[in-house]
Image 1: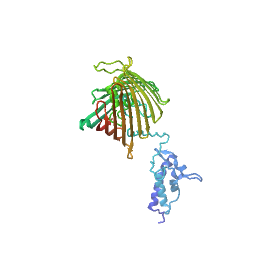
Image 2: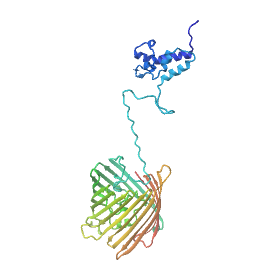
Image 3: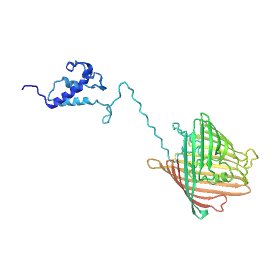
Length: 441
């Protein structure tokens, strides 16, 4: 028989081309046999035909060429490839990159992709999670884009083991601090209540802080730290040593100069004027030897930051400021931060019931990140302080301390410390070793 013979591959190519072209032909409302491609007209124009059942027409003229050209045995492979190419719309992108073939729906704007907010990791030793009572500038120094929580619960635990030569190196374990608190922050108001479960004086901080919109003027009311002695104002978490030292212990604990008090304080902070900060207030007086409450005390501090790495300050404290002044103290301090190096010093002078006194405090530390993640760090520390009584009753005290801290981000630290000190009341200097583990949340 002399009929026209086509092989199986050619029939499959023709069938695929016809099936792909039928939706476009149906949309144009013309029979398939009447479709012609005029000279200069692309096959895409005649076969695009709009959208049928939500499916767009082919974007190239390969199928049209396959339908209009006569089938030949030599071109059957190319016809098949062209027909299959029309089944999957071409995608644009970088060569070798997987790109989704599904494009935007016509007439509908593409939805914006939400950016993922990544929380910046804090460097070891960096503190921004302190309570306001420990670090009043914590919120002010936080990044501008950091979201403030309206209500926050926080806490910390310090566990210490020590061996003191004064007690023939008898080991002792203690819970130096077990603090928990809650704070709230609004646009013009912050409030905080903090308790230490390991201290005889359970309540530590309980105050409110009002501020204007620019945060330049503030008013404190309640129980908080009085603005005296930079060593006392420093957060215990930020301090590289385990305690605050013999000078602070002697002035604050023994002679009640400064510390946490009930009071009312005003504060001015001008960042544009060398970071000027002025704090002054009246506070509840201490108690005498018979336990009688004394009249109100006064305290003030002024600090500036000539440049970011350096902070300078002066502070003073007057006992029974509204009466005849017999007990007072004033101090000057400086702190320098260069990369991982921190160097601070403070000089104190004043008058006690025993007579005039002077004191000096020096402390330096260096934070060295360890590992590629930089979450771990080593922090060697060295400090020295001295106290001199210069009245009718003369006396001297000093302390030399050195140690090494291991820091994990801003959540955990292990502190090994050795101190040789001659404290008030000691006959000779003695050595003490201590290890402290600390964490906070």
